Length: 443
Image (cartoon, rainbow, N blue to C red; front, side, top):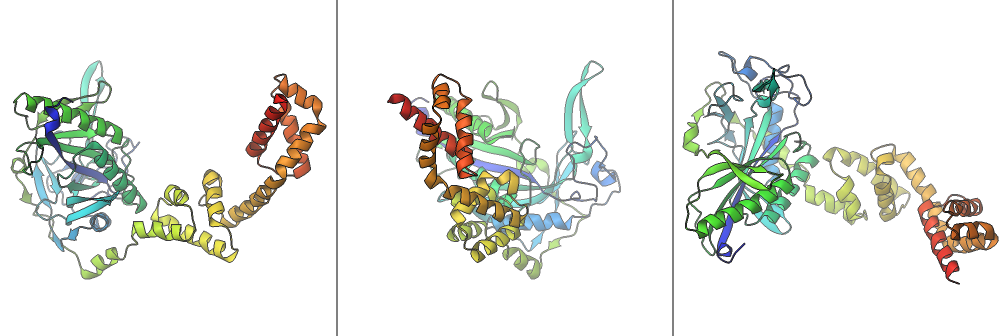
């Protein structure tokens, strides 16, 4: 980036869409599972936008949206409404999308990441669109529409334009993804499209506090790395144009992850272009005190993590293994046994991390029994160095074979150590043998 470009400061805002984990769609009772299902099998007149089809909201989806708003410290709208967002595209059968514009579920929130507070403008509920598939059919390039995704519950989170670099954006998105996965409101799988990222980028003179009169939207990017690359490229592109005195076109751009550049897709719409109208078939949604208070009693993620660390569990273990709120009961049972039997949580945690594929979230009694057995083995480590020396001294032929390059000879020595000590940690013993043999060859 040249010196002129350094005189511009990026202004970045995010729009994040996540599909909610519900059995049914947002406004009908068709299955919301649209991954790896035959095209156009989970559909009904509501999904297809047929005349006379009446939508009725999914209560579970609304509850999950309310939870997301709470997790992001939003103010809650006790009354929210659905509106029709009009635009015409093959993946939108009705010619409009049901969404919350004037009356979002939550607003004026924030998420703290690495000591920084990033402001959330709104959290609102809407429905997903159908999915277009571009392929060749009978030798012709065609676009097909799969309506299985049409109507799946979707939540949009919009930040204020408070980001100034791609590093903060990625850190924010990773924290958000972890939070939503922990509370099991969404899988947030970007490869499947259940978490979609959009960034609005513009530049202003360094030191200015005014928002620019344009923004460029980066859309349909399916990884944190590609989003960071796209943002960095777009910042350089805009800075170069502005330094030449040229005006930036307000548009939506995609990102070519192979050639590493952004490209124009279409002119970006403004809110007034959508002609929002209140949805006449869905009455206002009133949130009772009971519903709101229930959500507010949801355990705080940060406090939960700190609790387990205070109890003596290693931070890396908790951070890696405690990934879902539904796991808390299992962890609590393990903690009860650890207290009762005075187990070392630091050692138990690392044992769990090392053997997570074998023991994690399985029978706790079996896990604790195996941990105790392994602890006995660890106790033998104090004798290991002595026994290794004895085995090397009493097996000169095997030692000579190893020093001549016969790698398998070390496993004979390993067997001799195991014969004398019983169960040992194989990797630790091999390392001790190699070090002792290397030392012997220097003499």
